[in-house]
Every structure is written in structure tokens, then in C-alpha cells.
Length: 174
Image 1 (cartoon, one colour):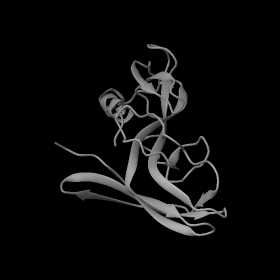
Image 2 (spheres, one colour):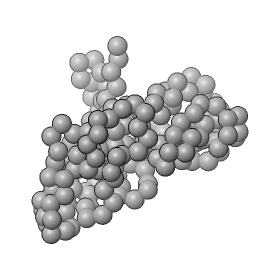
Image 3 (tube, one colour):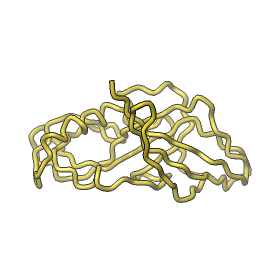
């Protein structure tokens, strides 16, 4: 589910044209739950998409085992998986599905443990420029969850085995 963070980012695009330094006015929550204020200078997104799967506090695709339904207020996965898995480099495709644009990632997760690992949720984290106070200079990069999807069918990565994941980010144009 697309988060409020993503919606705020989209709302700021009109004011980003040509700005190199801006003030942060639009409240967003970073992945730690701290409220920051998004500015209008987009130093990395949408210019640079993070296509990697990360198990640390970085940007890109993240996986977890939480199963609470996703909401637009989510700013982190319910239960991020940080160990026991490695990931291949993802491949991606762009397209349109019923008139709605999407970005789809395909990657393989490999389980490095002797026990099955179940992936129930997946998310996308993007760095965005923000300020710590409303009206402050939006000069620091923070990580923001822009999508959290709870899988309708969890993916089991077998002990010492692998599983393929297809993850689609999609916007719906009404």
C-alpha cells in the first residue's frame, strides 16, 4: 500500500522545479518513526531508484514477517527481517496495468540458516531530503517507507534454499 510519505512526496513535486535548497514544511515520518519535514529539492528520488534488497537500515527493498494489514500511515515494516537471508541483484520492468503505471522488481532470496524463513511483508524505502523542524533547511537525507505490502500468500524460503519474489509498486489513477 502506498504510504502517506509517498503522497506527501508527490504533493511536493510541483514546487521542486529548479530548487537547489529548500525549506521543509510537509510532515513525514522516517523509518524510525521520527517526524521530519520534507523539502522540495529531490537529490535522489526520482532520479535514483534503489533496486537492491537490504537487510540493514539502508534504502531499497526490505522484507519482513509481520502480517498486520498495511495502512497509509505505515512508516516501517511491522517486523523487518535483518538476518538469515541474502538476496540477488534485482531486475526490474516498467509498464502499465489497466491504465495504471507500475514498477516491478524480481529477485531471489537465499536462506543461509537451517530453518525455514517466512516472508509475509515487503516494503520500499527511499532516501528523501528533509528538515528536523518545520520551516528548517531541508538539507539532510533520511530514509522513508513509501510502500508496505502484506503478501496475500506468504513466501517460505526453505532452510538452505531459495525463493523468487516479484514485487510490484503501482499507482492507481482514478
